[in-house]
Image 1: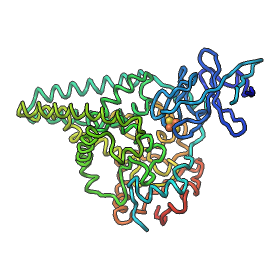
Image 2 (image 1 turned 90 degrees about the horizontal axis):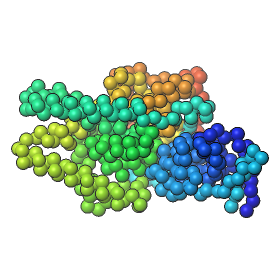
Image 3 (image 1 turned 180 degrees about the vertical axis):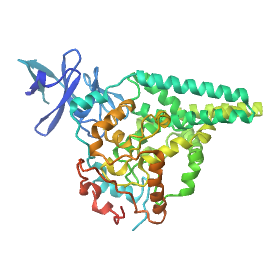
Image 4 (image 1 turned 120 degrees about the vertical axis):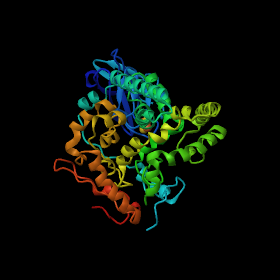
Length: 103
Length: 363
Ligand code: FES
């Protein structure tokens, strides 16, 4: 699977996320409070809303539309109205850049 | 022009989906990410303070009401208790349902369950109806929370100031939910995985009502019902008053909350009861912003919004004649003016789907 260069590490504040589009796919890339990086699919599984306008609290991301929450490390749906987990993608950091392994 | 059909199985609902209205993107005022992040921050402190005041006030008022019962001197205490029970529970249900009132999830969930019971809503069903209300605000046939259906039935609106229509609808649904889970209509927006929960919640609520009625019969007094159940009627007026103002008289089937929602400046007591939902355009545009930050959000985006009504009385003076006009002409609505600093309405948003558009009767 190819590793795609998504952004620089300092493009994302700690405890925040950004949107990253690649081809027809859209991703959300997260910077955790511990300084780790994670990636999930970019759209909420409830109604296809971009998560990039949402709020990161610890290891949770809250969707901006109906406040559904996911654990962005595992993609697990944590709070209604989301019921379906988010897909997650492997991430590595090299030379100050964040790479996502795109399926 | 055919009359609006608010059934989720009717032609308006079908047209909203087929025409693409339900998939359309809503208008949002641009707010820098840094500012929005700051506004979205959660905190337990304001909601803990307000919850202590609310529940403390309820215990005190009900205690005095019971002590003075059956004297008429107890009446003012019941009236005040009723507003906290039958109206403040609406806003607590709302904010905790969004999960924004407290930072700590269990606090949101606890207050949400208590408030759902008091406002007579099944906590499992209404979480989903409210999600639909946000996705498809005032789309005819799709939004299950339309307070003023057109043409409005004024008698029903007025009766509901005493909770009469809500309560008459609530108990048959509660019994049906307790016996068989969600109704066919509710199954259009509650996912199947939650149907069992709808039934369990209904059984708990029903059991409490049965126990309260049993106690009242055993004591030969309505006093237990003055504490549980009846305040949903004698204290409902405030949440009905503020609830009607949210969208009453404004456009339906549009994808710009500036057109279909109303912000009203209110006195501090009403704002406490209503938990700042008087900033209703702001809340719909940015449901992530907790109630205590809505006044700040209002300051940030007000130049892009219609001027707010300056009081409850002023808002009613605007809305009520419009609702009365809709009795004879259901296509009539109030079109909101924007300040010169605002981004204009996109007319294609306002008349998003030609087949949904009715003869323009706005002023
Ligand atoms: S779209 Fe994300 S919670 Fe509804």
